[in-house]
Every structure is written in C-alpha cells, then in structure tokens.
Image 1: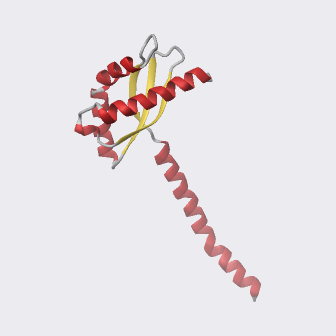
Image 2 (image 1 turned 30 degrees about the horizontal axis):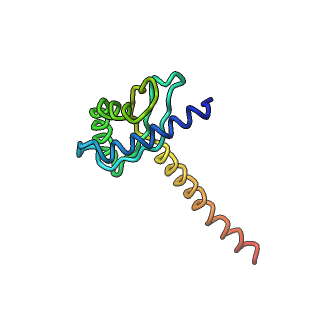
Image 3 (image 1 turned 60 degrees about the vertical axis):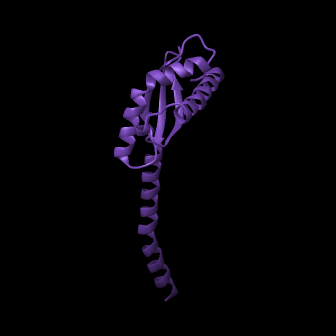
Length: 128
C-alpha cells in the first residue's frame, strides 16, 4: 500500500515527465503521448511510467521506442527538477487500461443488443 508521500511523489513525477516530453524531448517519433500513471517502488529506485499514444498500435510502439531511447535525457531533466536524494530509474510501458475498458464496454453493448429482441418478442406475446 502506498503512502500519501509516495502518491504525492508519483503525481509530481507524472507532471514533470509530461512537461519534459512535451517541451524538451525533440524526437518526432514520440508523437502525441499522455502520461496516465506513475508507480514508484517503495525505495524510490524505480518508476514505471504508464503512457498512451494517439494513433494505432504501430504508432504506439514507435512512440514507446522513442521514449525508451530518450529516458536517460528525461531522467536527467527530472533530477534537476526534483529535490529528492535519488532520481528513480524510468521504465515506460503502454497503458492498456483504456483499451480494456473499451473492450468491456463493447461486450456490455453486445449483451444488451442481444437481449433487446427477446424483450420485444415477449412484450408482443403478452399483449395478445
């Protein structure tokens, strides 16, 4: 379970990394990226950065590779902005939660779509 201090640090890291990527990373392959979440280990040695990319999967993979190429630069910029003893090692991963959410929504829509004709047929039978 994360403490309040750790959650605050995760939020600060998320904001700073977003700013660094938006304003200082010059790699065009990064594209339009959103940092959705940050998980910092208990000893603050490692940070897993969850991100989403605008576009299809090949676009996201190219953006992820570009971020991993730039992670040394991003970490050095982050260390200048943070007042903590040790800047965590960064690992960028694609956030799959939005995709999973869309898939679940589609399943729910399909279930409701399959249920509708049966309800209409049952209503017509009860009226006769």
